[in-house]
Image 1 (tube, rainbow, N blue to C red):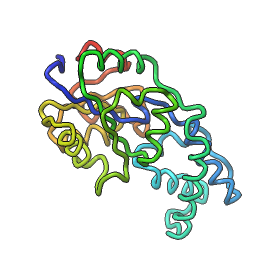
Image 2: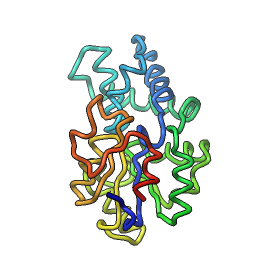
Image 3: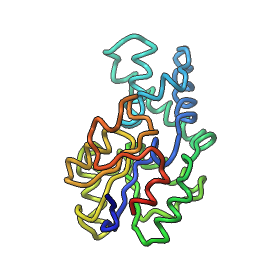
Image 4: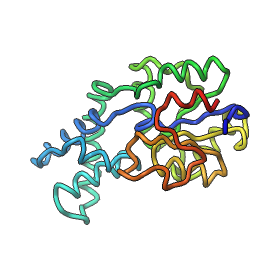
Length: 223
């Protein structure tokens, strides 16, 4: 199987192109420290990543406070503290997965349009792209707060296909999370699941992407 008939490749960000867990964990722990709560380890934070920043903050607080009914005012305050902490440490220890840079160069050279669809807040995307020096490879990017709906809704994928003047049939979603695969399925779009990402410690193959790859560099064989 190959996807040489596609002209738009939509990538998830965290867990697919980049590993941002060290910096996300640092920001979460600065937020917890504000409330005199014990820090979480990277392994504890990892399953909380993927639905967006607010769910990450809520899950971290629920775990440490052992309370599933936290006041909205507390959650709002904690979210703002987290955002501030993450802005200060947005790309310190974040890194690209093996093969990402070389593969993006290869796909760009072949003429594919590339975009990013992530559940990370929009304002954090470009600073990370700039720091890692890969901004030039992407025609567009949208975050969890860019549109009325986020993954696993089909809305972000449909938006990108329209914005970049192509069709669902000629587009494909690449991601590590069930949200990526479900969004693609909801949009009737092909998908590639990468097995090395976060995905709530679940097997990405369980969500039946069109293809599963174990390394990002395998994409060069598919396009």
